[in-house]
Image (cartoon, rainbow, N blue to C red; front, side, top):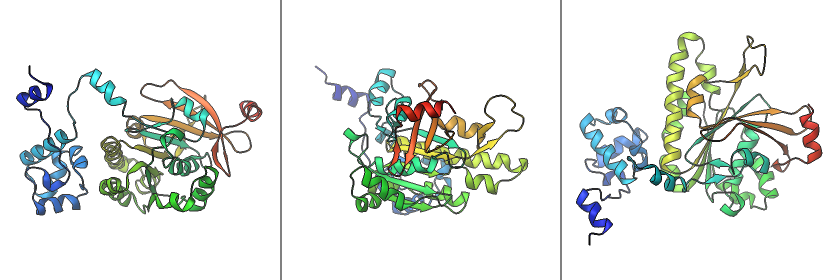
Amino acid sequence: MVTEEEEKKEEGVIKKKYEFLEDLPGIGPATAQKLRELGFHTVESLAMATARELEPAGISEKKAFAIIDAARSSISVSFIRADELLKMRQSVLRLTTGSKALDKILDGGLETQTITEFYGEYGSGKSQLCHQLCVNVQLPPERGGLCGAALYIDTENTFRTERIVQMSHHLGLDPEQVVKNIIYAEAYTSDHQMFLLDNVDDIIKQNNVKLIIVDSLTAHFRSEYLGREMLASRQQKLNKHMHKLIRLARAFNLVAVVTNQVMAKPDVFFGDAVHPVGGHIVGHTSHTRIYLRRAAHGPVRIARLVSSPYLPEGEEIFKITENGIEDVSEEEKSRSRGR
């Protein structure tokens, strides 16, 4: 009787596991160094690359396809049946927000292998949520965490370690250990922001990063690309940036979070005139979009799930206190609903 392994060997689909760039066929030390200079530090990053992206390393199109195919075969990126996909979906993990109500509309928390976008006006709680997630990701799975580190790209200088310390104390974690597990970088321009994300794959692998945050995604792009004549260029760069983020999320099974600014549309007379920046590019690439806004008074915030591949729209209330992200009491909820 032919075993499943022998069957696969006959079909030529036995996969070889490549650990380093130099292990891939056709890549020597010099080529590997050029690829690292381009931001490809791991086999996973090459598996998600395009042939055109490898051209600056002096690699021909034919050779690039062969390298990418080998990298993809190593991490099982191929056509699969839907029942196999269902099994793979079981490897998707969830990260708690700290609020049971907010987790509820997210079906248990933020998913790995996807991008979650939080957008809202100034003071709506976007950065506070990001701080909380940096702490929560270090919790064990039974407490809603992923036992991993966080990588934080800050574009508006809003990250505060003091806030991390407060939240850590509330969760009974050692603040010194928590801050050690947060890898921080401040992006000074949109190009610098893209460069940082293009060169993090090795950092992710070495530090067991399970959460990437870009806060805020659109701030630099919005300030640097002004006028309609620069809109196409801005959108192309945003598209490339977002796709790099989703590749990292899928390759390393991590949670990707972006925050987004909003703009007012004066021609909207009915409903909410506030819309996220970035247009369709950001809208289509973000898997889950959550609109945050303040309640009439106090620390209460309203979170509305605007879009998701499979979850229904929903709205829940949470609050931001000295402890971090928390659920509200029934009394606070009724007051906020009556805004």
